[in-house]
Image (cartoon, rainbow, N blue to C red):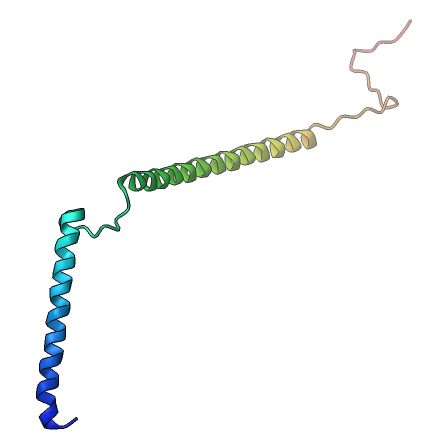
Amino acid sequence: MSYERLGPRIEELEAQVAAMLKEAEATDAAEDEAYGVDKRGDEIPEELRRRETRIAKMRQAKAAIEAEATERAKASERTKAKATTSTDAETEATVVDDDPKDVTSTDADTTQI
């Protein structure tokens, strides 16, 4: 582009930018009137915002309940494991001899006369 054409081209582009800005300002003013200041009109409706918040809280509560249930199950398993271990130890410590041939009398001399 030649030097002579740069001047008019710059003025043309400046005019285009000014027109775009004027159009954007008009659109912004119309949206402010329709939706309120600092709102775009595509915000999530209040009803949905409450529901999204409610869902988030419900998910947090569900996770807490699941964590508590998992901890209870683990505690129950540990208790059962301890009970099984102590029962096994007691069973091993108590030896029962059921052999009827090996009967030893502890009564004082039960001899028949």
